[in-house]
Amino acid sequence: MQVPTVSAPRADAAAPSWKSDIVSGFLVFLIAMPLCLGIAMASGFPPVAGILTAVVGGVVSTWLGSARLTIKGPAAGLIAIAIAAVQELGGGDMRLGYRRALATIVLAAVVQILFAVLRSGKLGDFFPSSVVHGMLAAIGVIIFSKQVHTLLGVTPQGKAPFELLAEIPQSLTRMNPEIALIGLVSLVLIFGHLGLSTRLPALKRVPAPLLVLLAAVPMGLLFELDHEHTFTWSQNVYSVGPNFLVNLPGNLLSAITFPDFSAVFSAPSLKYVAMFALVGSIESLLSAKAVDMLDPQKRRSDLDKDLLATGVGNLISGLLGGLPMISEIVRSSANINYGARSRLSNFFHGLFLLLFVAFAPMLIHRIPLAALAAMLIFTGVRLASPSEFVKTFRIGAEQLVIFTFTLVVTLATDLLVGVAAGIALKTVVHLFNGAPPRSLFRPEIETHHAEDRVVLRVRHAAVFTNYLTIKKHLLRQADARHVELDLSHARLVDHTTMERLHELEHEFRQQGRHFRLLGLEKHRSLSEHPLSARKKMVDADLGLTS
Image (tube, rainbow, N blue to C red):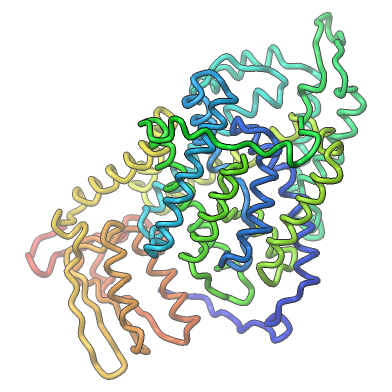
């Protein structure tokens, strides 16, 4: 594989600058504030819960080994789990469901801390890319299906994603014109910012959520949403009022809510504990890895320490009434673009949120819910964008099948079942493509040493289920300057393994070492993508055509 040459970081970028971190922290705060509010409300939590999570993620988790440039806070990827937990555990009582959901977050945080102690940061390397992206696409559809009704100012009847999608035409005919106008303007601004910023790079310095608020808040004042009243439009009477605005408590202390542990060990609660712990950990680890790749200084984070910081942060957040947090990729990418140098930027972003909620809660109350819905719809559309389907298909038709299957099963059931189904299907695809069952979890690896060069030969299969073992053998060769992985005897090398080996090759390069793949010329690529799965054309050991 060819890895692009990476230039050495400039000397002036080597030393962290707290001034740069204050600036980036402030700009990320402007992005995070409306998103935290929107994610909390979409999750069935009080709006301030999202702010509380980001404050804990910034002010506390920063000092526990958090990855250097990541921003921690609530994430859209956990909305589907949170709202389902509130609805199911409360049995129709949203307040009770919220407090019981907090209990599952606390228990899930303990599980995440155990993951970190057991050095399970490597979990991020196990899950197949197509399954993870299918799960994220399903989350995007779920977010869109719920928030489009909020943007139109309509309360839907359905609860499940497919029901909510089917109800969109009806909501369009029943939409509240003033609320829908705020939502439509917000949508145009946030999608327009995305399109124009590619042509006008200077626009990237202006956070899109800030533009939305600068338009939506004055519109809310114009329509007098702060008091209950009716208006007539096209011979129809509509009601508007404070229920279309963000509702915050008078002070931050009164927002603190303690968990209800009365049903935490029931089967439904344990299901959500597992989902919060697994999905939250996977998302956070993948985001932290992605942010490391964007770091101008090419520093590598200790993923186990980052998982510990996330787990402790979630423990505190859950005990105080907040949402679960992860290392969030969108805010973290913006953090880097705004010039962050160290983990202090995460701290300052949390500090600015704390100060704003403490001293200016009435400004937050002026934000229309339709504007927050527009921001979440933007997030959902990007997660489930048609380009994701095209990108997956280019990697391989089998990847698109797994991606789509994971998406549909997740929408029909829940995230845990969807991910499990995707993994099961991918395993079946591997067996169909010639991977021997015995090699799925226990790869046969031979190691050959020659001075400062080590060659590892993998037989039978190199796939996602056994990649962690292959990686462990590679990392054991810490003294070897040249490491080669011979895959000439592997019948199948899947896309996830190709992707992970590409990342590993990059890490070796950063260490001044060399890593090379051998034997792939004997394999047929399942697509033209450079990291597509490879299937052996002729099995040299058995003399059979694959």
